[in-house]
Length: 164
Image (cartoon, rainbow, N blue to C red; front, side, top):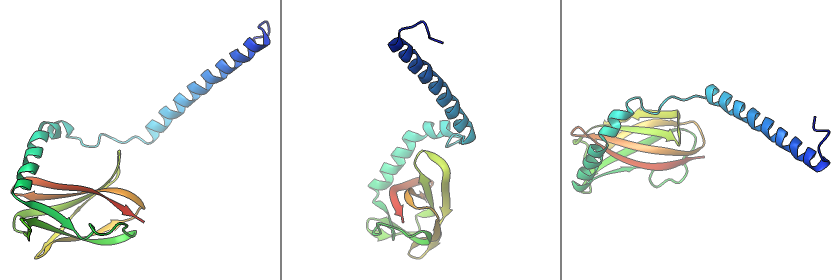
């Protein structure tokens, strides 16, 4: 193919040709993987969420000023075992447990940058907060979001949990 070229230039041309072929193959492989493992947009109504973002931040700050705080029995545990674990969530206002203010409490377990394993669990109200059983089926780090509905306003707490 490059017989009339100097041997060093011929080797350089073969390297360039091989590199170009590898680049094209890698591009097609990446496109194939993208279509094979496609995930849709994380939120279908992302536009409305974006429009209401400032309002959500204001609501969060207002509820924090009023003294609201969310605590769980998982706060003191560094590693949670795989399997079904019970979560107990307390909504406090000025240091006192209050259930009356919250209509509901929802737990979201999410992985970073994917919606594949995102799960949502509604907790049941009790006299001492909210309780529920959460299946922790995969090891690793999870993003934990607790969302309380207080008078039509969402009060959130985010954190990370590790499952062994």
